Length: 145
Image (cartoon, rainbow, N blue to C red; front, side, top):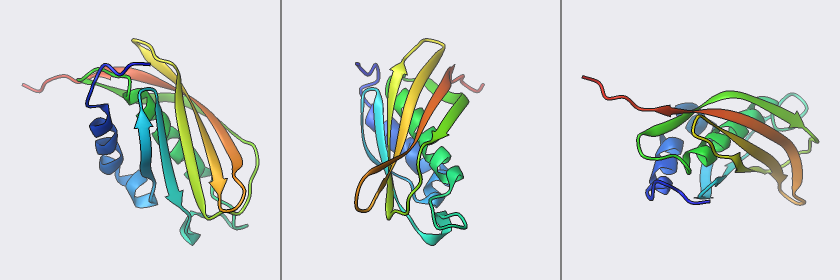
């Protein structure tokens, strides 16, 4: 895939830095390229549910944000994406020290993009925790007069 915006990396970095909720959670950009994004998170007690596993809401947030980032790598300047819907399948759970998310664009389109995001637990053996399929609307920025 080819990125229509050569400055896509700066766009993704700004998207991670400017997303207050994502930043508060501690989710950080690891790497990106045309059509994909990887992010990581060092797990802390605040990220865990009552049994000591990574919280499902955290996993879904990480997948959603990475999916948006992956879709943005293929957008032209002046465009952005908004999540229309996503479905997350939780496949397994385990205790871990960090999470890794990899999001890949399956279908880049003019009106919407479809992205798959996988979240893995790390800290010993890598375990696939979830798979998310997200549909994101392509929007155009309008100038304020």
